[in-house]
Image 1 (tube, rainbow, N blue to C red):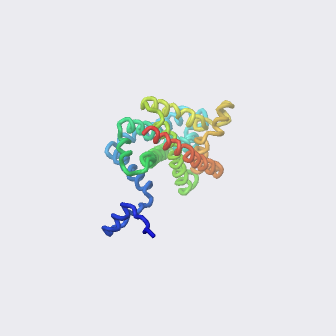
Image 2: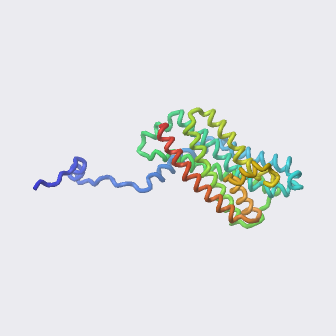
Image 3: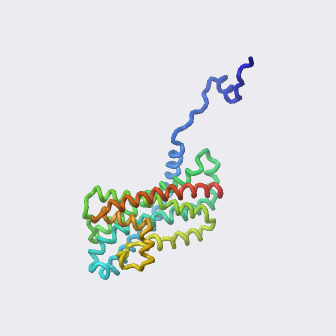
Amino acid sequence: MNPPSVSAPESSARSTGQHAPPVRRFALLRHSLALAGRNLIKIRRNPISISDAVIAPVMFLVIFVYMVGGAVSGSSDAYLQRTLPAVLVLAAIMAGMIATGVNLSIDIKKGIFDRFRSLPISRSAPLIGSVLADVVRYVVAIATVLAFGTLIGFRVQTDPFSALAAVALTVVFGMSLSWLWVLLGVVIKETAVVQSIVALSIFPLAFGTDMVAPLDTLPGWLQAWADINPVQATMAACRGLLVGGDAGHHVVTSVLWSLGLVVVLAPLAVAAYRRRT
């Protein structure tokens, strides 16, 4: 009987006394974190690039509180307590929409992702790394809005644990929604078009809520949109966690929306990235 055949690589490894290279565990996570670190280095070398995530939400907060606060809530102080939790969510959205979608489109056009394709890494690692790196932008934007809000009179009405939960919920939702910006940045080839669509999307997402005025004062069609808008659920959850009220239902709804966005949008973004690159 003939002995079983041995493949050439196995025969070579046995003849030299070497073992086959081990399969590295958690490769996708390590590669994604390494690429996230690349994006963080870019932020460290150019801190001004994070200014859009800080300045715009603060400007919105000032406009809302001092221009419409008295008309909506009777006083600017009362309106500040009501609207700042919603502006935190707005800050997270704005922190990711430009950085993730537009910068991703720029990197693809420059050929950087072609270099990534030549490396022995997962095809989805560059996208995941981009999303993970934006956590820094979310935290900076949220911390800035909270600090400025405290300076002008906002006070947390619950407890430190609930406040941290509100921040964590906002970051998680921002990361989940950022997969929409990733998908747009990969599918649309022209960076200018990506920037326009991403910028316009802020209006139905953030302003189709009770951020500026109570839901019962909105027209019926806008109330119907707010009822199914994931941003509305997250804003309501943050408001309950920061200033009190029924937060449990809204927190669960926001978490389910976050999971759903990742489950649906992340595979679509990765598939579109594979086709494009």
